[in-house]
Image (tube, one colour):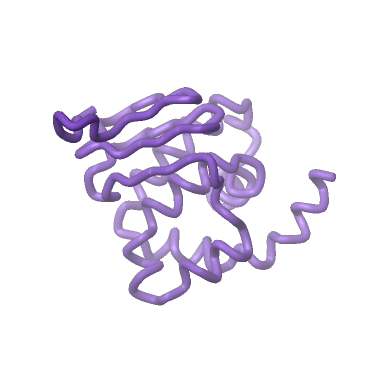
Length: 142
C-alpha cells in the first residue's frame, strides 16, 4: 500500500518549488535532519529525494513543512492545492508563526497535539497528546 504513495510524487512539484522559493530553507533542512534521524533514513536519502520521502511518509512533518512555507503558499495562492495533493495531518495543529519557529522542530506521533506557542526555540521535540497554548495566563515561549 505504501508503494501507491509514490504515484503522488509528480504532484509534489508544488511542494518542491515552495521549498526552493522559501527564505527559511535552513530551518526546513534542520527539520528534515530531525525526521530522517528519527525514522532511520539518515544516510539513505539526500536533498530533494529526502524531502519527497519525508513528505510522503511522515504526516506530522507535512504540518511543519506547510507552516514553514506558508509565506510562499500565500504569495502564490497554492496552499489549497498542496493540501489536496498531500493533506496535512488533521490531528496536529501548529498555530505558531513560521518566523517564530526555530530549527529542528520534531513532532513524534502528532495525535491530538496542539502547538500554539508565542515562539519555539531550536531543537524542540514534541510528543503525542500534548497541548501547548493559552491557558488564560498567556501564550508560552518554548
